[in-house]
Length: 202
Image: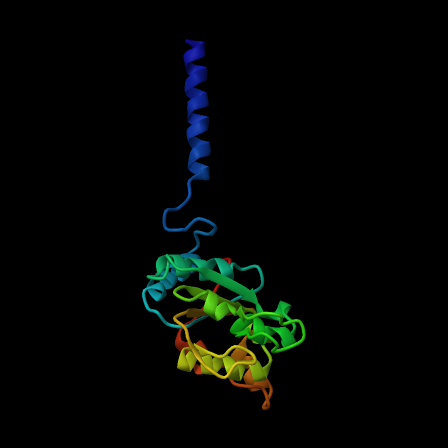
């Protein structure tokens, strides 16, 4: 009798632990959160994923912006395609254009052969431009053209190459506040404003 009671007690403890470890089915793997704000963010991300538009994700560093971007990709019609990400702030300005658009042989010192950029590599999938707020103004203009024309030109090349890429962007900065705070600051491309959602960890 004592042994039976002990086994029942252990079973109840195990059930309690399993309940604590239970993951809400509405929260995808890799994301943690069950607050109303987080669930609203995920619901919006699911709906946004069904529309093949450019998305700007804003939020503090460490809030999970890249995870939200990956979730949007996974929930979209492009899920079978590649998901590539680049931290724009971590790449020197002199190399960023080549990283994004590619280059041809001899375009610059060290370019010993042709190289495709991330826009071409992500063809058929999604490209995340992380820390987009740190992209230099001149590069913003080139990015705007890519978003509008859906084509890229490798560094050192004259011909345009058609691309089929969904662009997501993320930043921990308030881009509109940056614009209002500096009259000479470039206005964020209209494409960024197609969908804006603050990503929070609350």
